[in-house]
Length: 160
Ligand code: ADP
Ligand code: MG
Image (cartoon, rainbow, N blue to C red; front, top):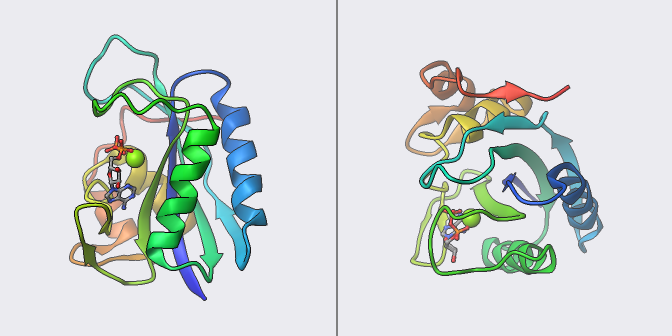
């Protein structure tokens, strides 16, 4: 069993409902149990500014899936949520699922980098991660809470 952390993001449609559905689906995957979910945070878009604000959250998933099996499953779920891959990064999307951490593993492949390269730089990832797992180790960068303490959260608003 591995402990993985998944970043959820989206800015099209009913994002809270999309997140709830996605979390329920993950919890139902073979050999997988959803352990924790952070609050949802509102956050201005990265990249093109002419798009709605994003909502972001982080979930802890205990799983027997391998990292690549988990990535496949996450991408399947993104597709099912109606995400269109236009080939451009950072464009509006209904659901973005990033595999942030997988135990303390490090992987550097074109299709899969773990830790996800945004984990230690993006406030909307590190703050929700530190909320549910302050002690989580981001290999190469230290503990989540320590990284979060150095990352400006002034743009983030936690939803009730
Ligand atoms: P972003 O999340 O940066 O907006 P995308 O969701 O469109 O970008 O992902 C682009 C590619 O990133 C995917 O095709 C995927 O294979 C790759 N990728 C590499 N590492 C990861 C990871 N840890 N989690 C999710 N996708 C990853
Ligand atoms: Mg992604």
